[in-house]
Image (tube, rainbow, N blue to C red; front, side, top):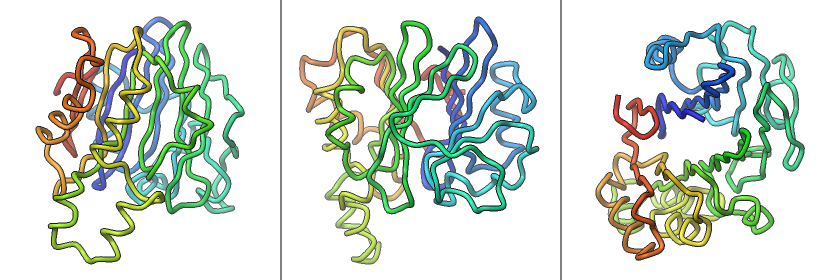
Length: 251
């Protein structure tokens, strides 16, 4: 599968998963302007009409803020409470897979301060992508499903020392660091250390805070925790906000 990340972070989120053989194209989240989506899709010679399905993780504005500007032709999948009753979408729940062309999309529960937040495990033939963002912890029942994936998009939101030294209000610091907030670099790295396996090719560190993290801090923390468990052939990428990446390469 090919992976296009149009944006990842509190300023807006949108990701794409492409089967290059069939041309089937999935989108996760819609938190950036439609024009930015169109520009990102040009990197893979696709346009808005090529999107086959849109999946939403949860109802925060940086993930659904521009959903009303979409053209309405795409099948839309979200958990109960993510969108209003006037929105046309199919309600999905953890553990019940959805087939879209050759893809199998498996929703899994997340731990975030939103109604029924989701993350996803996406299968294409013998490949697997684990997509984890906006969660303060990984639910224990999900861990076996997440092992030895080919690709991980995994939240690595903040450095805890930088968070508590920041100018953010105390309540916001507590919220971010809680089990209903966001994964820190250290927590993210310790989860991934136990999950990565022989099949793992690429790890994308996502939803990095501009104020409470840096690309180099996230990378160095993960490498320190992994030690020799990070294989020489595994590509580790920390993704800057408001930046397009295709298969881990800056666009």
